[in-house]
Length: 398
Image 1 (cartoon, rainbow, N blue to C red):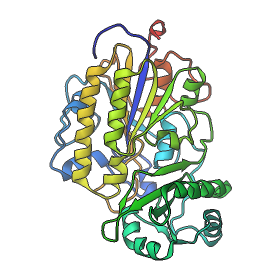
Image 2: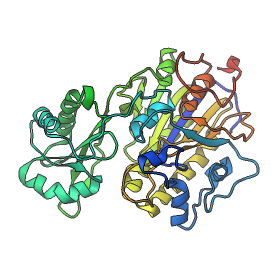
Image 3: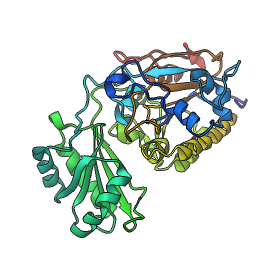
């Protein structure tokens, strides 16, 4: 940390999407008993090269080829587990900030049934094709030519609670696709209140289709208030980088910053580390999930982690006295196991703050939000799970 006078407390939470740290005790029920995203990734590429994360204690969290444990971890380190069901970005991010779903969100392992498909098509104003669980790029390759000929929307899902609609920008402009998805979101209620409706615009020609940066996630409303709501209600500024605000249905965040790619999200987070006066920043780094995990691209996944590691090294030099930096994940997406879906895993925890002592901390995901609340000098939100792993910091500095 750099020295200098502390102006006010700041808390940065960075979610390395899908960077799971081993199967949870109940993972077998999800078909994920063998999942271990980071460890299997390290083996697949012959070892990871992550000096900054390693110095913080990533190798102490989990045995990782290329990232040995250190005798003096530079952060509180450990693993965090979900309290509720699910293994997707919505429930994972919710749980980090104290929102635990009472039951699983609806999934459609055989595609959307006729009655649901009918209301989707009525809301969209177009017919749909595909209507099956699919990896996103494969959906474009297999159904994109038909979509170009007919104008039918490419509708697909996964083992997670998602409804995804892809359309070529020359057939359906991005803004129109966003409007369509908003109408679909409005009818997916009650027993069909899917976790996310996701707009997936793409461009190019058959054989070279590629997604644009115009993705839009429309999440179901969180069922309870969150630690982010508590921070905002106390008048502390809240910032979301990337898809975070979308996952909370835009609740709780004063400022939303772009982050459709890791490069953009890392740059914006770095700017906030440099310049933010005080408040909470929550960043999602999406590419380890959507670009590399789901596509089983181990080399790309490892390279994305190297870029994150380099950014973390920069941030550590910019942190002020009184700052909290948390690096964690929301679920896994093991690129070495069969299938292309998320995996039910622990999330790694690395937390940098003055007086951390290099301790180990294992607990629920909600401890992240509870720690942010405490660190920012606020009283714990009543009724929300989680406890601070940073103790009770001196509030006179806040």
